[in-house]
Image (cartoon, one colour):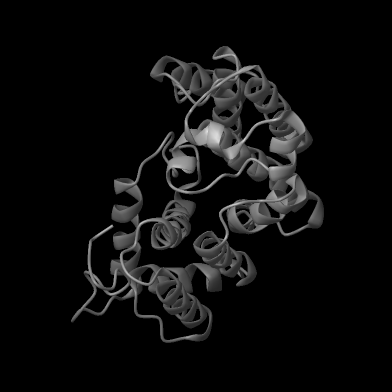
Length: 299
């Protein structure tokens, strides 16, 4: 993110964006923030590439405001919430919200999922601990589930059944990310492991901060990994309930999250002394498997 007194206005001063230039801006922004897999793969229909870039740009920029922006992040998130309202009601000025206004109108998308993502980042400014697993799941309903709902809406899916399956998958992905980054998050002042679980397994916050792994901590992580895997299984039927054009990406993201869990298991659940990672070879095998299922098995 460009370092500026106001990241929302950085790079947009004295410039107005039409729909086309705003969409181009979103694509460039999304490509600059490439992560495990490209957010827009060649397996998606061409008419969905620009909308997907726009949705991804919105999600990533929102998270950047909550995680990295200098200054008063709550004030910035309030300003971004106002921009979101403009995307749905008229008068958007930021390239992301200008492009988003076109996308939400074309695909008849609701404001709720976009607003919940902003709320998740608001919570990040004031909440760094989660007393119970249910509290953490409720947070994931704001931080993770909205993304899946946005993608489903681009494909025309708005039914409760598919959304519930998507929510399970997105929550599992979020948990896998949290379990991968226990040490990093703690260093940043956040612990996503439920406090009730720390007490149950006899693990202290001080132990996590000192990166002291022992049998109790490994048993705690085994417990949490199993929870995430159960959610992946719960969301599995979604693959057979969506358009074939979406299945490759869905399989890749799910396989990526599960690979993180397997990497944690391979390290005997010690995520404190070394961060579990996925190799390029593993990513390649995931892609090959997804392609075989798509083009050879026809599923």
